[in-house]
Image (cartoon, rainbow, N blue to C red; front, top):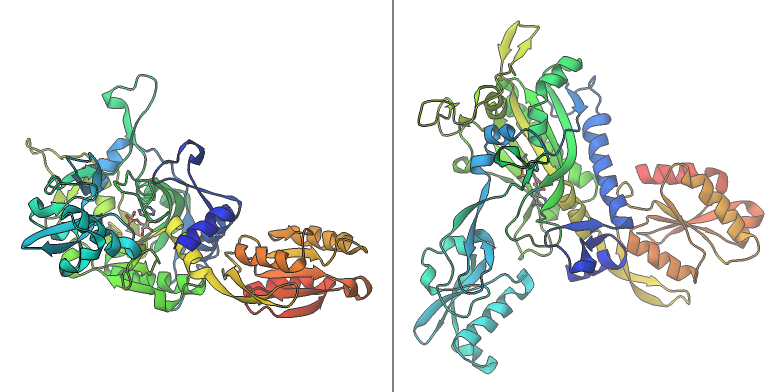
Length: 534
Ligand code: GAP
């Protein structure tokens, strides 16, 4: 992971936000290569899921044909939306505070091991990354028991590493930054929504929230979309946009950020068909990641157990990836596909529903009134064919663009050997990104900076630049130029050499196979496009 993080900084994929002021935890900036990668990922999602969808053809595995449309709603919305969605009351993580270090941790992210020395058994915790966790636990245990490294064998470990939420007794816990035992408080709820104030007066009634998910913007526009388009159920509304969560311990590079982008679909269907649509979306989304290069061995689909599901839901599955910062055998969530029943549309109509009631009823306050009032608008759907009215059920594939970009970067990172300018094999770092995701599609080089080669290369560059992201480079030896493009994930390098001047051909070097093929300049654009589509 360290190598990937260092490449990201060195080559301008990702920078820590506000770095010159010491950085801001949980916020990341995408540099010149990173912004292209993330944009390509979002464009691929938008095209494959929304704008490129053919509503006249029934895709394999789909119960029927369906419509797809897009939306771009605001980040700040009416605060009542978050009350009805449940985020105001229920969107929290558990945190623990350390009375000694004054630091705050997310309960389920503190890891540790039971360690015994001469009859005293303590739970030593750490926030270290997976690869240094055991060394850090040992170091802290030795320090606590006032032992030296050579005494490490006098420590005995009981059970594997586990998270703090599995521990009931806090008096024997050594907090991640504490010197004494029992300094951690019991877990408390912490709402993850960022609060802000609207307008110049900024009174208590002027507060609003930065959205923690893009989904609610879709639910509250359901009727607008129906009334302004010709879509009919089943159909999906897609949206890409920023979301904000005040994560207690943002970590693992961009994986858990406080500001991130989501790519979400709310798919509205008849209740009787919702199970079949859930299965369709779950399988389709898994296949999509693989079509862009994530290998099956690094991906799992984790179906939530029935006891984890809200009772209105027939299923939720997470698509998870074996991120290299996680311990061997553990996976991190890339996307969740949830069957949400009619919870959201009914909550926005009638008032926030109580998910523990059956059938779901509006949650009431001590006066018997709705605890959070709904909009009162009719969000039901009338099926013209059967002349029946129902509240649609929703299947929600919800992906993170930043986690996606990180997974594709991790998968793409390779070290192998390639010849340098003198033909000697050297280690090279190469990002084997899918051509659709690669920030630069092709680089154009004159072999040497003379004899008319730069002029011809610049002409080719100008021509290609009209419809793809290309890069021109005439500095340094050609081998070094190839190496720089390999690190940036550029799939093709085009070189103009002596032969090019006479027969109007160039070589295309393939990043992954290192194979060089000579093609006519007049066929170049078509050749590149067909390779990228393959
Ligand atoms: N509307 C449903 C929803 O928001 P979620 O599982 O909370 O569901 C969906 O979020 C996706 O958003 C996650 O699978 C993940 O890819 C991304 N995501 C969530 N929190 C994130 C964070 N703090 N940093 C980066 N990505 C995050």
